Length: 289
Image (cartoon, rainbow, N blue to C red; front, side, top):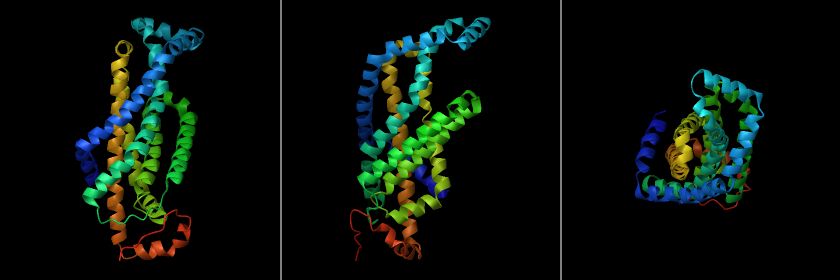
């Protein structure tokens, strides 16, 4: 727990590093172009489709009666864009995670390693191919869990808890592999994931809950519709910053944990005893003499 808290504050401090701030603009520009482009092409059509669906839904008729009774019938025009926002939000989260994972995590790992762990041996237990396969598999499992649990999101407690758990699990899986792929062997990575699974999941859940912040920006009703061009980039940047912080938190935590693991008397024997599992490593291990 001490390592987790220490890594948290270090990640916060690193978020103000000039290099980190500059790196945060790269996914922002890329995702801003994608989101704005999709919005310009499909926003009107999506609104029309939602309105047609709502007009044909008996549930919507009941909702209109309820809104009229409570004096909120003016919100009728706000509901279609909000439904689209809620539907699109998970995909923006996934896009942010992938962008940070593939574009920024290696740079953040090198930044922290050069400043804090310059003597930590790089065993290169991962590869680009394995990293992509690991990320895609984790993503498919997370989307599957999302779709299976979607009906439960109508229950207020589960609407907050389930997305946080799903995105937290996805975040810790993807971030752990990306952070350790350069410095740890496969066996070291597996051992750290086994040993610190609970802490890593907590970190993922916390950052998953933090990822709900842009939803507050988007859930401004009519203001969102009027300020679409302004709020979308702000929301995307907030998502990016959340995942940058997440990556930095995992980098500090995992590299620290790896350094402590290697300092244990049994660490070398444990890794050597499982050396046969590393025969598929793409690059040979280099042992410092």
